[in-house]
Amino acid sequence: MKAPLAVIGGTGMNQWPGLTTVAHHRLETPWGLPSAPLQEGQIGGHPVVFLARHGEGHRLPPHAINYRANIAALAQFGVRGVVAIAAVGGIARWFPPGALALPADLIDYTWGRAHSYADGSDGASLDHVEFTAPYDAALRQSLRDSARHSGVALAGEGVLGVTQGPRLETAAEIRRMARDGCDMVGMTGMPEAALARERGLPYACLAVSVNWGAGVMGEGDIHAEIAQSIETGMAQVRRLLGDLLQRQP
Ligand code: HPA
Image (cartoon, rainbow, N blue to C red; front, side, top):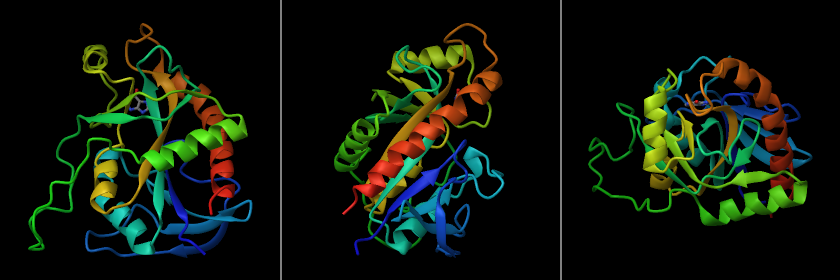
């Protein structure tokens, strides 16, 4: 049997209702412990490995996640690709709360995170990984196909801006991000995507808009927006993923 796909679940998908557990794997990596044990399981009889990005009980804020250990543990397990689920704020008008998107590119605004395996510590030669297209084309196509087959609408593709958090942005910051070309904003997309590239793991992001970015629609109550849209958005994500896993070789 081929290696399974991994799904990294974030806010709104810290667990996966419907996932039958086969085993929990407490993997240790040279970069420490991942956010949680890897949950090897099945959806509709199809294998998958699930990792809760924010840890059990959703206790890790975006800047305190050990992204290096998370990606290293998935690589160590031998997954063949990673689908990262991200709850984000919509900046582009086409991406309202409750909608899903398949980002095509990203801009990294994070700082101070352990963002590379190439930190000079292991004597390995320095490698500037290619990152022109941060997301894997084949995995993205599979996600598009599964969206179509499962009747889940993708509102668009676009650019994900990744901020440091854990605070939300100011209205001016969101206006700047819009000028930069960002269509959505999240806090966990980096360095996760770059580390997956360094480890040679195909990686794609499925984004769920759970609120409008700060100031996009005036001064709404962002937390109320999130509470309203996150469950419906994640239900769509689970449906799409069910189809994706069913079609795996
Ligand atoms: N900003 C940053 N990250 C987010 C947001 C937001 O508005 N919503 C969900 N994750």
